[in-house]
Each structure stands twice: as C-alpha cells, then as structure tokens.
Amino acid sequence: IMNVIYHKPYIAVDTHIFRVCCRTGLCVGKTALDVQHALAGIIPLAYQDEAHHRLLYHGRLVCTARKPDCGHCVLSGLCKSRKDLDVGR
Image 1 (cartoon, rainbow, N blue to C red):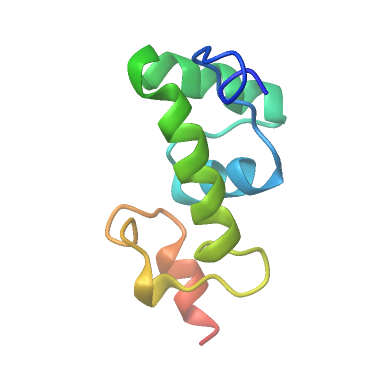
Image 2: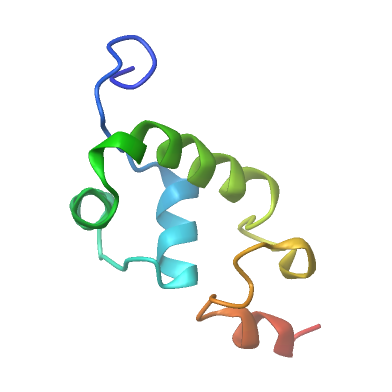
C-alpha cells in the first residue's frame, strides 16, 4: 500500500521476499522485520518501490519455496544456497 497508493519508498517483507533474501544471502534475518531493516539499509530509496515488487515476483515465480528454479534464476551465480539446493537434484 505504501508503494502503490502513497508512492512512498518502502519494502514490506512478506514470505516471498523473506525467503529470497535469506536463501540468496542478499540479507539475512530471523524475522521479516530484521530483513526489512536490512533491505532498507542496502537499497537506495529511489529503488525501494521497484525492488519490493521485483523481489516479490522473483519469490513467487522463480525462487519458490518447494521447488526453486535455479536453472532460470538470474541470481544463481550469487546465491549462497544454490549449491545446497542443487545437491538433491
């Protein structure tokens, strides 16, 4: 709501964003609020609205909970979990 309706730079962390950030190592936290604060510290204000949506859709479409599609992931070269996820395949 903050991004879309009020055009305020804000990154709300839901389950998809939390998973992507922790799995890839972009930022790690024990709670969604921890990750939200970490993201706010590393993503410039001008990009926070776009970053929120990109991370969200990446978590919904590519970095899914049960079966991440690492073969089509643009972040796979940077992902700290890629090797762990590929072992079971």
